Length: 239
Image 1 (tube, rainbow, N blue to C red):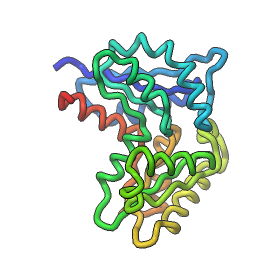
Image 2: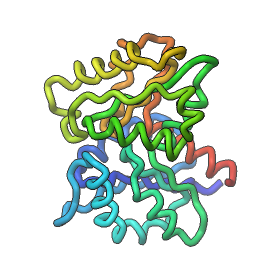
Image 3: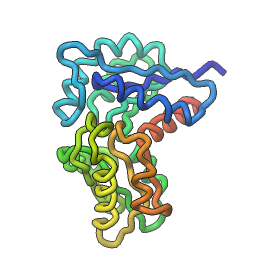
């Protein structure tokens, strides 16, 4: 079997954020896989931290020229920014040979839904307050639809920090735990929290913080790991 060549994209210009993805991805220990890690160029117009849909759109325009030459040499692509990122569709539209191209946002939602048991709901812990409405609307209107989301989605809680502050701000752990605690306390009527999704690529490795608040009975989904897993299954299955 030829190695699976997977492109992991960080569409912002912060190299340390890309570097933080390597260890958890490699620890998944998928065999016959070669990962290429991409960071958006640190040239004028680059976005160091994607803190709004506007930033996401700008990062797409900035990154596309240097990403397109990489597509023919990859079997699967993961956009590691937790948002309904326009780069996913932009790359799909430029791909001559069909191949799986996913964002960690979409992958994490599908993983969360698959983990839910009867009567359970999932919620998202994210970064800046702007993402509360953006992610909530995308779950309801784009990924799941309002009817399904109304049954299984409890909402989004944010920690009030941007992605660039997650590894350096003195109150990161407290704020992430507080957001997870609000998910537990504020679930939709008639449902209990069964899954918490980490709503930022920069939250990779923070599962233990969330689990200490929500309890061992609640599963915690990291979008980066979920995305790699989804792509592995699609490529290995020949889809």
